[in-house]
Image 1 (cartoon, rainbow over the protein chains, first blue to last red):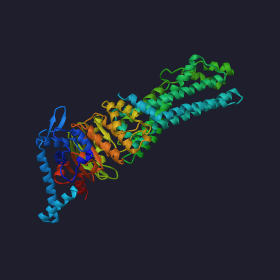
Image 2 (image 1 turned 90 degrees about the vertical axis):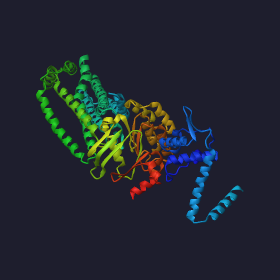
Image 3 (image 1 turned 120 degrees about the vertical axis):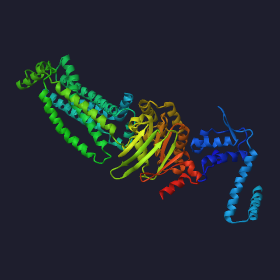
Image 4 (image 1 turned 180 degrees about the horizontal axis):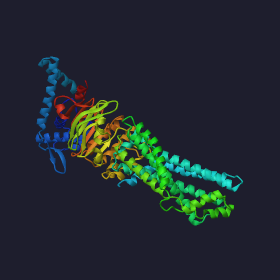
Length: 127
Length: 263
Length: 226
């Protein structure tokens, strides 16, 4: 996965700083980022994504408030050793579930039909 | 004036081809001079002098074109770059003028040098003082009287025409200037001739007639009288002073208007 | 405010440029000036640069008339405004001779980052010339950058290089006004967007707030134009 693949942004999908926060949590949840690992500086990430550095800084502030990352003076920004990996996994999964359920509801299917589709997809995926 | 040297450098890079062509043409004229082989020495010198007269006139034309070419730059955005640069309009105008004036000075001093060569070929030997008057004094007099005001006028004209470009009626001030200048210079000429000779003049070619007589024998009485007048009364300084002031005024106006241009 | 316009109107002989604009630009903002051709984007930037004089109203940059403040800001015009015989070395010589705030070391770094060939501009592509001019602009240490369509007519790779250089070189106390047609491409860069239509401001909003409402800047742009 190239660096930009991990940081997909959709201008129609709400504020960028929220999306960046979500991307960090997703990467943490998937193991693409490990606790203690260094994140790109706000400016480097901004340059990579062609977004305003203030926006990235805003995202990092929120992540810091959420206890996911920390800034060590002079060294950079890191995922916290005690970052809530399990929590972000749960969050990411639930967010995906919400998206799936919304789609299912739009299609007008029942919970059972929706659940069956999940099982089929799961089995297809593991072969 | 920060950046003046850089503006001169810029002017050189923009215009060196014109300058070099002008200087190279002198080689052509020098060659032309050698080619004149009419038997009568006086006529030969006369024809050769005529050639240099043409070279001098062409030089004025080329210098006017060289200094006046910035229509292209107003269109291509280079004017924008210069307008937004820290040096004032006066600096920009002065840099263009100084470069062109330097080229003009070199050109006309070289032509004067060629006149000396023509004289030498005809067997006329001037003394040292007359030589300096011929090679330095005469060109500088002519530059101050004719070439500098002409170049400053062209610069001013081009600035005026360019500055009203956007308003769409730029031709009006331009036309006024062209016709107005004709009238203005006429009036100026009259005014100058009235005050000429009120200050002590510069005595020129004091020893020239002696050299001519030595070579060709006694001079024609008419020519003799004219030469005496020039030699004993001297060439008036007033026209030069007035034209230098007029030149400075035109450069000042050009600089002032240049800064107001919309680009 | 680093710069502001008060009830500024600019009328041309055949058309109107901008009508009764009043705007302020504080320090540290990255502003996108968006709109169709003829909407007044260029006129706005040129008024701020002092290249145009308002028909009515006042423009102040760093508290002065723009021409007086010209050594304190950068204007990057749309036109390919370099002499054809100039090489990057010549450009460096010109800039450092004329601007006190020009950083030659940064200029050479940017030439490398932006991959500008060391040739005369007449031997460069439009994209390469655009990158050279951007390098010249970003090497000046000022607080206000007025960039008029720096991406116009430029190839994709050059545009990407230009945008990422802008992000890298921008400092938080600097203000950038950037006009562009490439709304989608440049959208992420802007904190504030000015959408212009027929010489007036149709929308003046914070980009992230628009997105909070579920609209991308592109969406807002389309809305305004219809």
